View 1 (tube, one colour):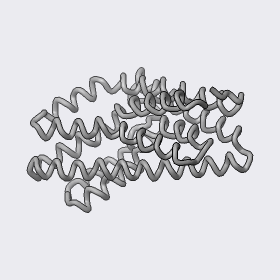
View 2: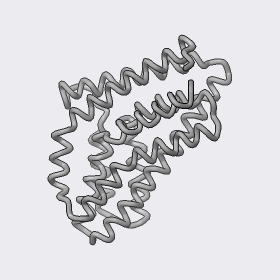
View 3: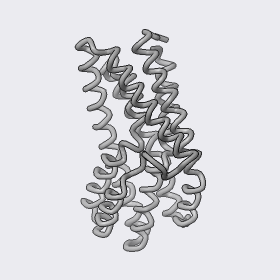
View 4: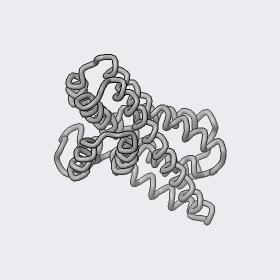
Length: 232
């Protein structure tokens, strides 16, 4: 696959994934909770700590996924790996599109209610270390919600586990956290968390639709790339 196409896929997937309602919902929740128990200065410091933690955990998860898939590919399982990952990503995309039409019914990729309860309990004890724990916890439990495009991109990058793949991953995750940082800054400078939550709920189904269509496209590309030997 050419560098230009790979960059286009990485940037496009990261942009769509960055407006994921799960990730936006969590940063709004945390910001709202922080404002109730601390100053705006503390909000900014702890919020940035949370976002950096999410970035690091996502980077480590991505590197692990690339390494694991690269090992399978190097052992001769390239086609089956690509097809299975592609099919799985397509299924995740269909679930996201289902939420566009029938939100809250059947299987969903949102954070499970039990994890939301745990997050609420953890959020009651804010500290620098606590925020790091929350960031790591959220990044892990959020993967089913945000991980579809990420899984597809890591499968593409797994063809060559090298420095260039690492750069792609760094850029992807930087784009992913940009809206979180933007929301944090807006709240720090006085934006209403309530209005932003209302905006998220209003636009949520369109975010689900965009994410679903992206995942179906990426999954189909993976199958074509590995199954049909499509090199561009």
